[in-house]
Amino acid sequence: MTRTTATLLVSLMLVTTAFASPCVTTRHGDIRKLLTSLQSIKDDREVLAALFKTGDEQIAELIEALHDPDVNVRLRAQIIIRYLGNETAMKALEDWYSKQAEVITSGPIPLPLRERDYEFIKDQYINKPTAAWAGADQYIYALALDGSRKAKALLHKLKKGAGTIDDSTVGGRAIRLTTAGHAERVLIGQRDLATLVSKNAFFITAKDRPFTSAKLLGLNGTKDKALIEMYINRGRLAEEWYHIVLSKRGRGWKFFSITQVAVS
Image (cartoon, rainbow, N blue to C red; front, side):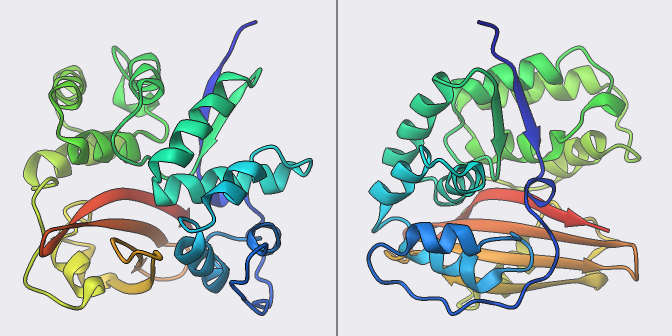
């Protein structure tokens, strides 16, 4: 049976109509209820933060939700697992992917990169013009953040294949920003994590920085990961929203995933 892989922005996979925020609780057994309430990754911030906080502690329920009869619950479980990057859940997710006739991945690209990610990058971006690199930015950022020999080699191949950097394309801009930035470095010296991200957001262009703000949405249960929302407001119909996950490293933090969740 032929298996195909596609990536879709989480904002396109979920209904983005604003809903009144439900009462968010964290009692045992509420994971499915929270997943059902997560209508919009961008707008339902309280629900997303609650899932991010409790997900590691109730990882078995998130894994179980991958087999839920409701397709939307399955999708949202996948997304939350990828936000957390919990290794047990990621292994279960890979096993779940292997049993699907068609694989549609949605959500962040957590570290370390999986073989599925490498295969997708090679299939979709190598030897193809940057103008055709749909959704390439988060994969390029993930390669830069991963920092392994394999990731560095593939990123170098992408950069070489891109030729002259074209900032008018999403992929070209991501290539330039990862070349100029310091994606792997440990971020220290700032207690306010939103400010820490703002100061070190290598993926935000210099011209967009005056229009960019950031806020902490929440920490996971063990407080070794943080979820930050970044908002670029250039005016109506020129807005972007990103979700950044940080991972604790000693006294500092490192970028764990960078995902554009919506654009207007």
